[in-house]
Length: 422
Ligand SMILES: *Cc1c(COP(=O)(O)O)cnc(C)c1O
Image (cartoon, rainbow, N blue to C red; front, top):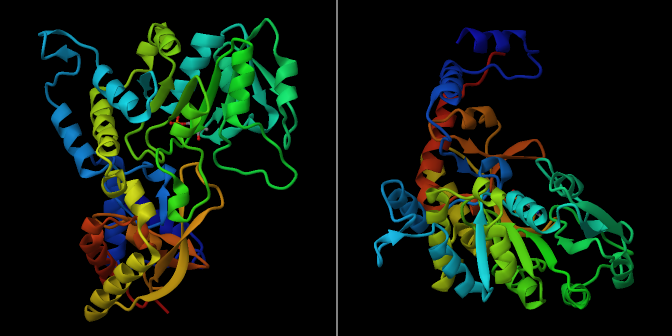
């Protein structure tokens, strides 16, 4: 309490608003929880960014949550119930992934970064990997293509230019030391205008003509077509495989909507080399990840991912559905003394996918007396968005089961406010 008070005392009165006693208590409480509570803590993501990197990217659906609970105890992680002998932790989820995608084999790691690191280390150490200059990117959080290649002991051979790379650029770089061609999804940025890239099928033909594998760092791992939801096209995993890519790597917790993990799909001979590499054990996922991933893949196999995987539910929500939810929140808040305004706005997908693409939404504008800091200090913190100097809430990323917590949270925040010292 003393250190929080001290912060308020030393801050310029113009920069911070003086909290009410209740707000102050909530802020102190929230700091104690930040430092001492068991975490991560549950929050309500009202930002409208579906894959919010700071808010744990993809939220899991009920089936994945249940699978985690089941796997938390003793489970058949490495036990074959049919034979009564030793099993492999990846067999079940691997079979589900190959059935879903038609890939020959699958291997799961703790993240897409780990997947790329494993692939390059196992297949290209002390040899060369060809990458288009326009794809030698930084994804964020320290994942930079040149650094990953260096760490793997491979030599990066950049070809083409930042904006244009053609097939002959790749062809001219192939020599006896070449281990692979790497295609990288440029993830969170886009080059527009005078640009040229080589399509995956052409790149696959070139690689195969030289007996080389084509590796695709697909990044976001879309298994469904984003165009169906009014978004731009995001390269999908099935497309990469159909194009003849030998190994495709992607995140499990981006557009796939599962737990943090890295998925590798492709040719069995290559996947087996990864599996046998010493690094494979160091990047293997735990039982909780495998359980949640298995449940997520199961949703796709059952053909109901659009309804049961939260990320796709949120993407698929129409602007009309969101407007109805926003109006209902407005009406309920009004009857309890909280006046909210609605206005059209935009949600984003986030997670390094679909840069610049938005989905139409209805924003709920909060009264100026409710501060973002107070919302963050609630029992169930609400993370809102600041838009043109105001605090707004986007219902798209708020689950239907969270609506009542959201309303109660807003009312509690309103209660804590006071007119402020004049
Ligand atoms: C997100 C991303 C990664 C890193 O994935 P993590 O699962 O966060 O490690 C790597 N490559 C691309 C293209 C990405 O979009």
